[in-house]
Image (cartoon, rainbow, N blue to C red; front, top):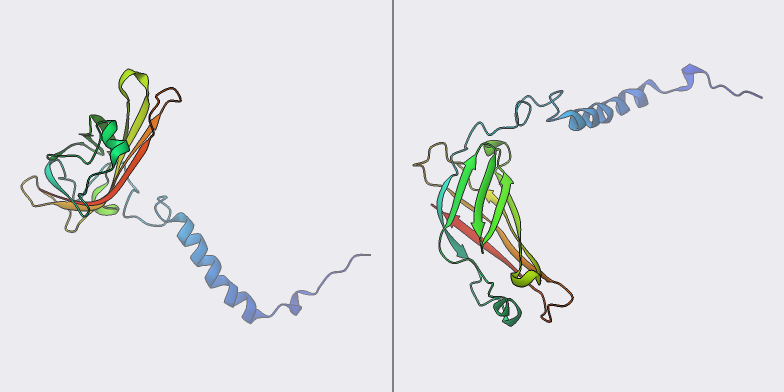
Length: 179
C-alpha cells in the first residue's frame, strides 16, 4: 500500500518560515570559503592588514609568583627578558625557555596569535612544551614603528620519561606583551 500526501496539504506559511533558517545556515557554512564572505582568508593564506607584529616585546604576567618546586627542579619557569617575534608572512617564530615556538598570524582577520613548540629535556629525560595563545589588541600594527600589544596565556608543561625519577610540572599564566 502506498500512501501519498497531496502537495496542497503543506502550509505555504511553514515553507516560507523554514526558508530563512535554511538560508542562514547555508550562509554561515560558506563564510570564509570564498563562497560567502569575501573578506578574511578568502585569498592567499597571507596577512594583509595589521601585520607588522615583528619586534621586541616586554612581557608582564598577572601572577609572577614562582612556578613551584617541580618546575624549578627542571630549571624551568616564567620567561625572563623580552619576547622577540620574527614574522615571515604568515609564520611567526620566537624562542621561549630555549624552545622554538612557531605559529601563524593573519592580521586584522582574526588578530589571534597561537605559538607552540617543544624541546627535549637534558639527557633525554622527557620533553617540555611551551605555548603562547594571544589576541593582538586593536589597532593591529600597520608599521614596525607603531606601538603594539597582545594579551593571552602562557603555558609550559613538563612531561618526564618514566625513568627520569622526577615529577612533571605545569605553569599556566596570563600575560600582556608590549613593544
